[in-house]
Amino acid sequence: MDKNEENKQDSTEKRVSEEQNVNKDNDMDSANDINEEVADTNGNEGETEISETDALVAEIAELKEKLEQAAKDKLLVMADFDNYRKRTLKEKADLIKSGGEECLKSLLPIIDDFERSIAAINNSSDVEALKEGVTHIYNKFNTYLNQHGIKPIKTENSDFNTEYHEAVTMFPVEDPDKKGKVIDCVQKGYTMNDKVIRFAKVVVGE
Image (cartoon, rainbow, N blue to C red; front, side, top):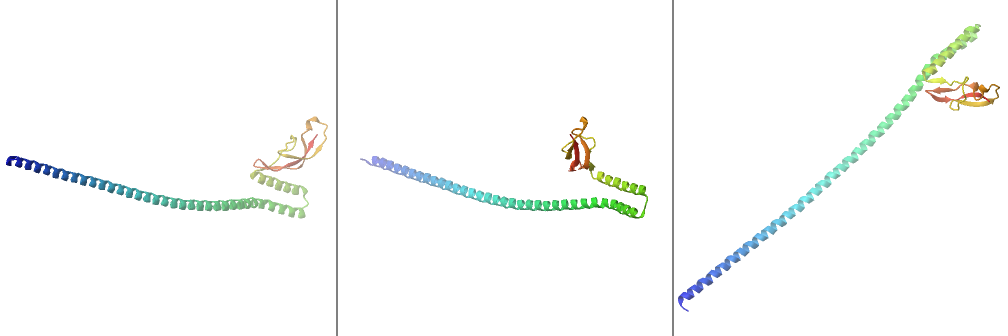
């Protein structure tokens, strides 16, 4: 082998060696790039996991705060309702008390009339004047009852009605038109605002 061939062979071997070195360097760079990408991916995944954990912790804290606020609101509502109930009961009791007081207060003038009538009976011999005074008191008392919605139940020539009348006895009658009708009232009945507060005790024809 002459020198030219040896030089060509050396040159070829050198070029191959250089190419192999370049390929090695490229392979190493590629491996480094891959490692960096993997590292970046792992880092991003770690950051994502941390971010999700923080979000969950924040959400739990917010829900806990809302639950505590709801419990406080419930206690406030219960306290308000209890105060309202007590206030309503007191107002109702005061209304009943004051209503009874007004009714009794309105009766006082009638009591005064009765006292004057009793005094007149002991000192007067005028029967007509006494009758007139008693009638006046009676009419005054009826007016008082009407003002408070109290009215007598009609019984004269009325059909017997169990919603208003209480039969104390049955009495035979010859007139067919009087059968089943009230022929006498033993005790007057009354309604208050159209509600029966005392049934009329009556005698019914049969």
